Image 1 (cartoon, rainbow, N blue to C red):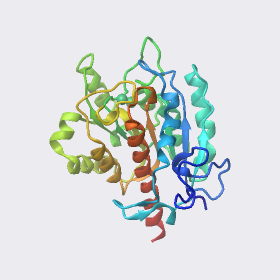
Image 2 (cartoon, rainbow, N blue to C red; image 1 turned 135 degrees about the vertical axis):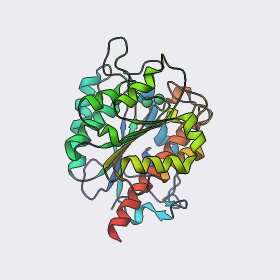
Image 3 (cartoon, rainbow, N blue to C red; image 1 turned 60 degrees about the vertical axis):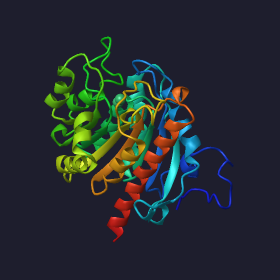
Image 4 (tube, rainbow, N blue to C red; image 1 turned 90 degrees about the horizontal axis):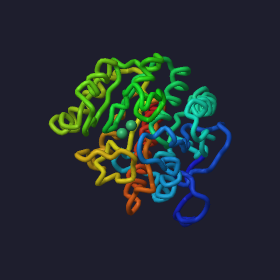
Length: 315
Ligand code: MN
Ligand code: MN
């Protein structure tokens, strides 16, 4: 049974940094969930430095505590969790990095462990989805982002951080009709950019509609779209308004608050979630660790969902 160090016995600033002070473990026995870094950033179209995202998230995460009052659960009453370290990415080679990612994920998924990946630019999600598809078949995607990431290419390149969710549909990894994108906003090249995502099959809720509908109705749409399908949740930190997450590569103003982001994740409870990623944290542009605070707490809500799923199975 693996759980965080007790910060009432050992000060939280002590020891090597792992997510939430979880043990750094390199095997997969007696593990229910794990947190793992994917520090790859050479498929980003603009700013780079997302390779330092996982470490900045770990740095702040020492402040997280095991009882989640909003979901009324002590995560470690139901779960054993570890920090599994990072994937050995290949800087500058996205295709080889995908192989590194799937190789690392396959034994994890084989054991039924629920992983949470910390990016890294958003290109890495295609590697995640390839591994998940191999284990679970066609999945639903719940995608929080200010961008659809369904462009065909950048500068002729097919595998960059603006294309993973087009490639995923082309590769048959997703059940796009049971997948949803939430929070899309910002200037585009033309109306076809959002239409393309819809033509691929995704349900798209742009930010203006998110505002108009409100959290409850958006959550209802998510649950309605996904149903009982197995789900992968991909959370791009630029879903948040840059006031709440300045440390990212392609910020778009007019987004949700950090409270709203937490609430969206909490209310995914009830879905059959097989894994998560949280991407595009770029600490070089972070101020006062605002982005790292948001990212680590969003991941905390993700692992709470894992504990809730586990609890439901036990009851
Ligand atoms: Mn984005
Ligand atoms: Mn993205």
